[in-house]
Length: 505
Figure 1 (cartoon, helix red, strand yellow):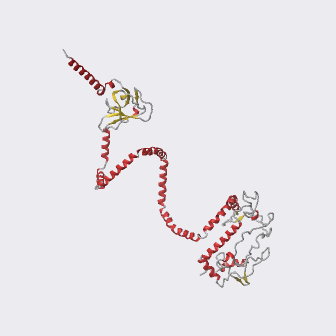
Figure 2 (cartoon, helix red, strand yellow):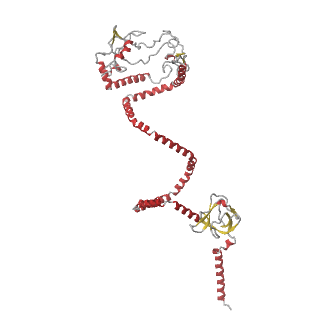
Figure 3 (cartoon, helix red, strand yellow):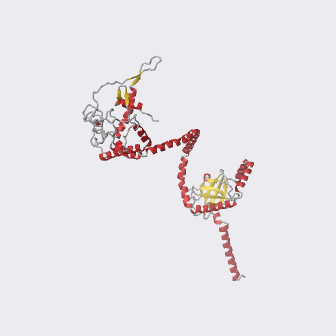
């Protein structure tokens, strides 16, 4: 008869045995999985097994979420039934990859989600189009063997020798390089998020480059053609570059010569620009009409009947009407500043207000300045005419300021001419030559339409800055011209003097 102690021991042994067997069945034998408890089934349709086996791991991004329950053959290939743990949601459009733990390791199934689509359901079948297989080891080794067989051994030996010579004795340098690479890797890890954002931002840029690929290739081809053309004309380009040195020297000399007057010219061009802006419609009209006028003039000529063996004579289709002093020339507004050719007195500034001042309804010089149309928008109103901007109501510069600027410009030009050694030497040489005594000290001629002109009595004011008479043109006074009938003056002297002027020695 069993004692109470023995019965207690037997009961404890039975309890421990039941607990151990139950634990082993649940955790080691996975009895619930075998019974379909705690899992849901997903089937893969594969063309081949891909070295999968029962109880192979099923992972989601590398984390185990189930096992392969069984593999069944069918007419299309292999049906692999996967047991996925309950509570694990796998997107239905996930890519399925058959992976290997190593080159000769076990195969497993890895799910790689592509989006947050609806999860897989119990009994759902995934097609073979969603499954990818690894390259078989046998195929990989065969490809490596074929690659090794194509390598030239002599060249491979030379490459190995050159690599050995290149890295021999560089152990410390390589170690420093590896340490620097390690620090670079640490910095990259510390800035991983900005790097990832940069890569994400590069996607649109790279997509744009991909779309522009054909255009870039075409541009590269055109660039090759351009470089080929430049190579063919290289001697010409080289000669042009070498020839720029004299041009630069000449340009530098030109800048040196105009540097005293160029700033004043640019300053004066401000007022000129204002005037051109007002008269822009008139200038535009002139530019438009001028080609038509030239074409009309060109079309007014024709070739006559060609003679045998001779060029055809050219005749003009223009009609001319010769008139003499009808209407007479305009002289009103030029005196007392009008100077006849016979006046050989000292030079003086050109008149600033000399134009025909006949009444607007006078038949004399009807196309003169006084009837010039005022630009649009003039203060005097539409249809008005005037010889000057002031007559049209425009005031670009005060009168006193304009007079001061004019006098200052004349003074500046005279001072520059006086400082020029060449000009001074020529002037002094010809002024001191007995053959060219300069203008004779005669009384000024009378004005055409008024009393005698007494305003031209020799150099004064601005025109005697250096104590000598200011000479226009080449800086030479007109020489005396004598004929068989005696000395001549006026227009004859003006025309004959250049032929008698000395050239210097």
